[in-house]
Structures are given as structure tokens and as C-alpha cells.
Image (tube, rainbow, N blue to C red):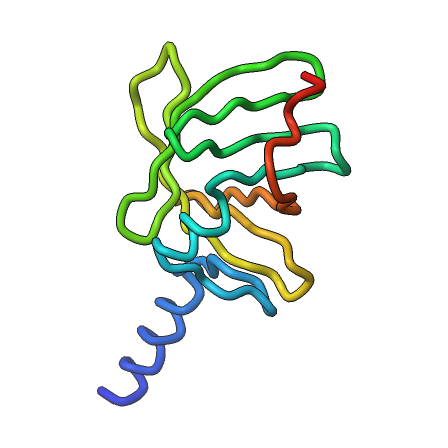
Length: 125
């Protein structure tokens, strides 16, 4: 009886804990997050959305029609950012994909996939 109850609990726990990474994704350490982002630009949704990660911690974000400016940092093994006028930091686990992409995964399972490009690609914004 105990063995059956234990199996049910293990099964339920497995169903309730969401998977944060898909197949072919590798979780990045804090040092790897810093290396992947610093001085580079993330390109989202086929190039419509861009975000640069400066060494100073500034991060301009172009959504296709409007430029906003936030601040970023790495805390532990997570990417964190704040977007004024808010002062609330949001943190994400980060993963690399088999095809060279980067995925941000929030605590609620929200996922943002980008291709990283060397240097500041924000000049046109």
C-alpha cells in the first residue's frame, strides 16, 4: 500500500512541476549568461524586436515602434532586468538552444526566444 501511494505522489509531483526547458536546451550558468549577453544584441521575432546588453548594465529595447531603456544584471545564474518607471526586478533562467539561440524562461513558464548577434545592432532605432 505504501509503495502504491508513493508512486502516485511521485507521478502527481511530476505532473505539477512544469518543465522549464525543452529538449535540446542547456541551462546557462551566471558566467555563461554574462558572456552571451554583454556587448551583444538579442534579435526577437524575425528582427522586429531588438535588445542590446551593454557592459554598463543599460539595455535599450526596440519593440518595432518604440524604444525603451532598462537595466540588466546577472544574479546567481539568472538574467534580471528592471524597466522604469517600475523599480521591480524580474529574473529569468536562461538556456542555449542547439541552433545557437537563447531562451529566457520566467518563473511562470513564460518563454522568450532570441538569436544573439555580436555588437550593438540598435543604431537604426
